Length: 419
Image (tube, rainbow, N blue to C red; front, side):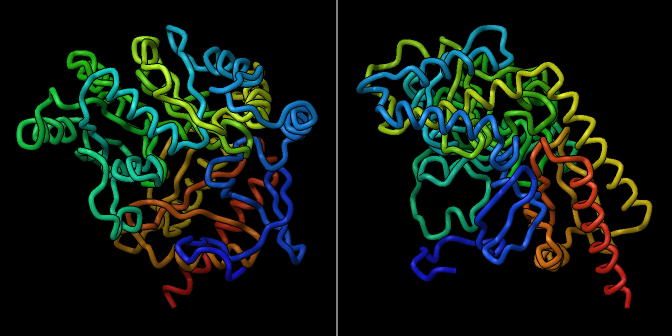
């Protein structure tokens, strides 16, 4: 790797890519890999989707940039309306475009403060909302995001994330929330509760639906903004347009990013006019926010995902295949625990003989898989969960090829352990 790159960057796979096509990538030596990383959830429609490429090329020949808050441009206006139509809400959402998921988070915090006059935020253990200073304090993990940073913007209060995927119940989370409000902070100082409907960095865990309903009612009763962070779980990753559809609960503010624009940097905040309306002029904005190239890519993404049979194909080609392989591996006695998440947002837990998280096993699997042409992404509190993020458009035979390879590696490691 080049020495001019900042040493703070932690690299999972020390290779240099030069080309990508749907679920395959190639490095500088010409070696081909099956990509189960997908830019960490950015490439739900694969590398270089032809319709997204065409949209970018066409836009580049017309208008590359205009700062929307100085001189508005048509792609921003078109995308705001398209996003509002794409989000499955009972009332239309207003939209603010940003440069990334982290910036969307920052803007949502601003909106919650502006509308409530409060500053406190409740977030969840294991959550991830970005790396900027305010966003990083929301993350439910210290290392390495908060290490040596000192005081961070807040106040932020964390409670356990309830999910069938981690064994924490809705009742336990309610008790933790009640404790925070009785010991740590006055409820009248809480501006927002931010939560991922499916936790990403923490290992692909679906929020307990009962607790989601409770949160919706709790926020309504107390004038608190309920923020759903769908930066990773949105745009089809869960098998639906947005993961909150699995919970039958809608947010006040919805955060988007990653796969919103097929690989071009873009983020967004959308919400009901109750939260998005009557904000001070000039309080939100940004030079590159809603760049025309990114808007064109996002419009193409939405158009593709709006096709009538898109999600039915995803459910058949991805979720069912992954579930079948996980079941087979368990029957074979391979060192896999739960299959976490839902739809096409799945995590495979690696465990030892006692069923405990096996960090060392995943640390061995990652380079071994890469050597044989498969790129995997780790996650979870103990870094023992394989985060499956191939394109939703991956060909079934390529998905099977990658899972077959992973199965062989798990079997080899099992034999090596027993030897």
